[in-house]
Image (cartoon, rainbow, N blue to C red; front, side, top):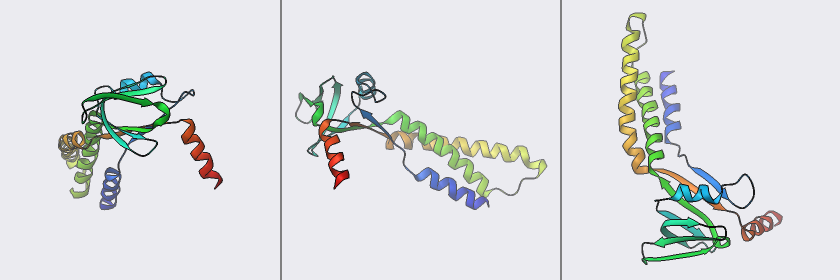
Length: 171
């Protein structure tokens, strides 16, 4: 039973997490201000509607265009929002938090899997080991999460993409 529990937790930990948001002018979607706050100081990957990819920093979204600095060409440039498919970047601190949490669960699960059955007299030792291995797992998981990061994706809804979706659904 303990081995099955440890395997389930392990499978849970190796699945990747990410966040995806929609940027458009309709209510309920991510606003321009929220987007600008999220990408501030981040290096992002911009995918245009023609599937070309641009690496950029210092992104700034306005009502009708996205402007950025291209570190390869050393130029500040921009395009209309209708030409953008999505913007992706990696949030390192959120990755570190998820890594610490996953490490803590993994360490505690390892303790549960390898420890003997609990007797009343050994309960305090059992819980101490559980906490200690969970803490060690968190210490290991945090820097790994910082390195791997947490992917964040902003999808841009524009008339071209909506038209493609409608056509794809009819065919």
